[in-house]
Image (spheres, rainbow over the protein chains, first blue to last red):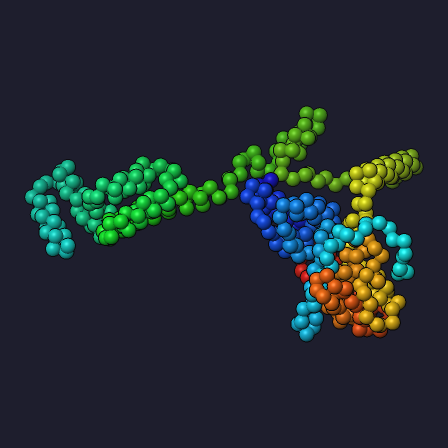
Length: 111
Length: 306
C-alpha cells in the first residue's frame, strides 16, 4: 500500500493512531487529549481503540472527546457538556463509572 | 572598494588588449568573470583559519556534489555564533559568504527531499493488464495474473445467449443449478454466522447497537413515567455501565433539544438531576430523525452536537 488516498476514513484513522501511539510508546507523554478519534470507526474498531486507551491509561492520563458509547463505556469518568440554545454550556460529571457493577439489573424500568 | 575594483578591471582589460586570443585570453576572461561575481561574494578571500575551514567544508559539499544531508549545518552555525560572541566583531563580507554557502546547501537538501517525495514512476509491468492473460485458459496462472495486476477483471456472467428457444431440459437444468447455488449460499451464510458466534459473539449487538435515535426515544419513555418533578439521573438507569452511558448521552442531546434540564449539585461528585421541560409523551419523529447517525458515515451528513 503506497498511497493514503486508497484508505477509507476509518482505515486512515486507525493508521494515523497506530503511528502516533507507536511514537508515544517510544517517547511517552503523561497526558493525552483525543478529539473524536473514533468518529470514523465502526463499533468493533472503536471498541478496540477504546480498550487500547484503557490499557494505556495506567501509565498516562487520557481525556477523550467522543460520542461513541463503546468508547464512553471504557472510561473511568464521564463529563457531559451540552450547549443550550442560549449558548450556555451545561456540564455534568459522572465519576467512577467503573464502580457500577456490570451485571443484569434486578429491577427493570419498564421502557 | 570601488576604486580597487576599477583599478583591477582596467588592469585586466589592458592586458587582454595586449595578448592574443589564445589560452591566455581565456584566462583573462575567467578573471573578468570572477571580478563580475565579486558583488555576490563568490570570491571573497577568507583569511581566518576557522572561517576558512568552514568555507572549505561547505565548498567540498557543493563542488564535489556530495549528498547535502551528509553535512549538518547546525553545529557550524553554533560554532560561528560562538566565535562571533567571543571575538565581539563580525566580518560581514565573510559572514555573507558563509550564509550564501549554507543557503546553497540547504537548497540542495530541500531539492533532495522534494525529489525523494515524488511518487515513483510506474514501471511498465505495473501499468495494466498483461494481455497474455487472454491466452488459452489452460496455460494461464490466474492467481498470478490477479496478484500482479492492478484491478480485478470483471466479466459478465452470460449463461445463455438466447439465439434459440429454451428446451425443457435446459429449463430443468437451470432450476437445478439455481437450487444448487441457493443451497451453497445458505451453507455459506450458516458458516458465516457460526464463525461470528464463535469469534465475535456480540458482533451484531456492536454493529447495530449504536442507534442514538433509539437511545433517546428509550430514555424519553423512561422520563415520561415521572410527573415532571426533578429526579436523580440514577433513577433512569438500570445499573449497568452500558445503560448508564446510554442514558447519560441521551440526556445531553435532550438538553440540547430543550426537552430536559440537567444540573448537578456539588460538582463533580454530587447527584445529577433531570427535569422534564416538555410534557409530550413521545418525541416528534422529525426531531428524532434530525439526530445524526453515529459511526462511519458519508461526507456531508450533519455533525452530532450534544
